Length: 113
Image (cartoon, rainbow, N blue to C red; front, side, top):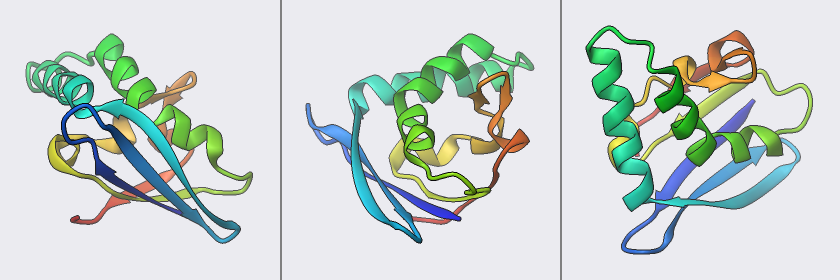
């Protein structure tokens, strides 16, 4: 399992993902909130309209999740995600990952920040 905690991103500072696994912890600098928040809003609007929003979901996944997934050790099958701000609206399991979605490979759940 891995714990992923999102924090920061005020002003021009990047969001940071703190990734904690049995093997240790690391911090990853991501996009700024000024970049991420509109991506969340766009994907959320498409999903609400009944559209899969694959392109918008891929952009959001690249900004906030791809670096996290790339840093995970082999064998991690569960992700506990503690989002911040607009990231609370993200259905993490539905984000594109590779040829499928996150839920195809990882069991995910969120916890409040």
